[in-house]
Length: 355
Image 1: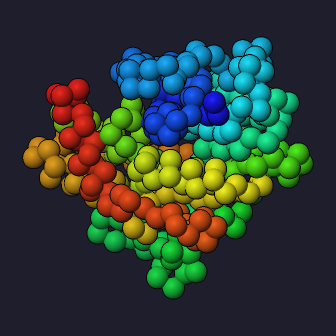
Image 2: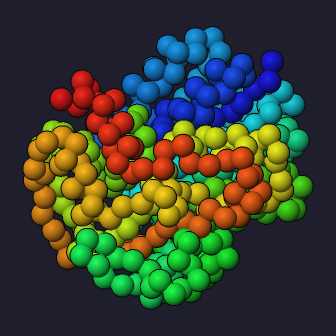
């Protein structure tokens, strides 16, 4: 039986990858030690999601509570299955740039060293395997903030005459900008994924995600903006808008569309690719616009406040240009082209769990 290895299998993208490939008939080997609970507290634990996967997939799912930084724990998993491993989906990470500043060693060891361990395990045990890494748009640092932005009533927008009007392409420089420590550790991982492709001719891709969302996301204040925003709206929890007048813009992509992008690459892989992946021009929102949507869906006025100090290295406006990926995989398109639909699904899925 062909095997798909998924790291961070209890998380948003990892769990969807596990369910998708399990239902496709693959044996799924999940690796997740619930570090998200350590990062963001008990309410952000992914254990419930792991149990959901085990219930749905049964013996098609094999879980390892291993640490991706630990070669002695990871290598035997790859040694066991070797060339039977058809795909590695590497989603495990420390995902918050605020948290990274608190524990830089932990952040870098997970994001950079952990990715190195996964790549080397692939090279040693199954070099023909396709390796997909969930990177981040934070690899560009705050360079997007140098673009000519225009302030509108509820959002920042890019000047209409700028060549990036369709979104930020992969050609944007990673240099000479503030990345945050998180951005730096993810950039190191991103470059390692590309280098293992070029140097060892492994079929690798780094997907530089915008805001990845979905109903099963264990959102927290420091990570998972749509999920956390809706949870605050549903539970009456106070929400703090952080900097940029709440007009900062993010493109939002549904986890199912991320999995479909991963699967498109898996079926027709290339070597050493980097792709920007988000909602693009079809699916984006500012914080203020997101608050308005959550209030409209829940029928409740949100309890919010504003703090002027923005997060260091944070983006004012970020929309992904999807042109490169679409040119390589023209059959792929967004099936959730509306941010509001994503918020609505988060609300419907979590009505019982959060209220």
